[in-house]
Image (cartoon, rainbow, N blue to C red):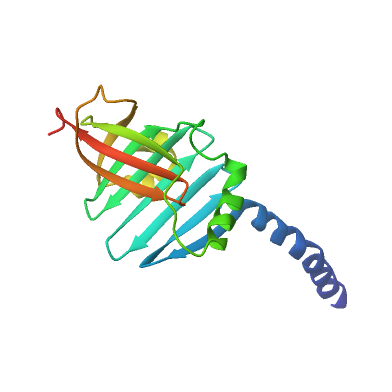
Length: 182
């Protein structure tokens, strides 16, 4: 009777640090507070996915960056829409740099404007298979109007109304309705 109990205790002592280490390597969460709200960044190292969510009195949004597939999805509330686009890896922070970026922001006492901006134009095109963008994107965008967003450069595009999201005080994601978007 003592042998099974002793075995269970020893396994618990051996496995607990290993499981804790595995969990720390898989999920990392950082909360960044600023005037009137906060951003919560969650990193899944196993799946190479970063999720940044903002909650404020003026509106909330969430963006998922899938570094494995190269796609990103952004949900904007209260509009109840999702935007899907290809990640611009030259403008976005690297996956490994995200924890340090969050730490740097938490050390600043006041907000600063983003140092980079990516502008997208929206295309009214039905996304038939949200599941192909990953389980996080599927879960976030299911049941919402979902549009394709293409990155644009320069003034050659006639952009209508835009919404600008400040992600981690590093990157502004600007989503604009073009003239053909109805």
